[in-house]
Amino acid sequence: MPNNRPLPSLDDLLTFIVIARTGGFRAAARRLGVSPSTVSETISRLEAELGVALIIRTTRSVHLTE
Image 1 (cartoon, rainbow, N blue to C red):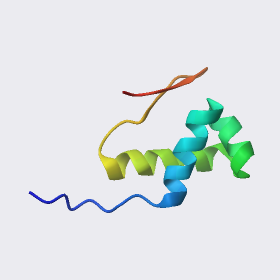
Image 2: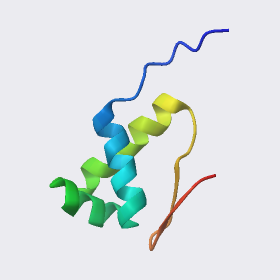
Image 3: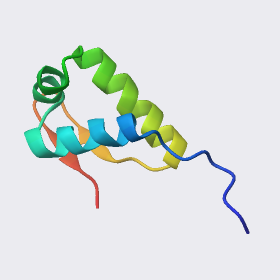
Image 4: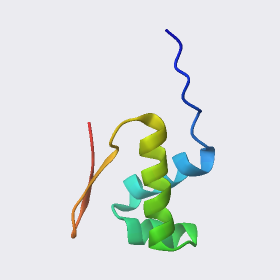
């Protein structure tokens, strides 16, 4: 059965990669030159498009899901 979900944008995937490399939303936002809320919105959109949680967020840290 074909998957009818749209492919994520390269910018959204880049945001995810920068979060993974920097270890946080604020550090990723600084590296990308955007606000932390923009990074959060991007990841929320990416997770919705893919239908999976990519990052476990707490007030003090982020962890990638398996």
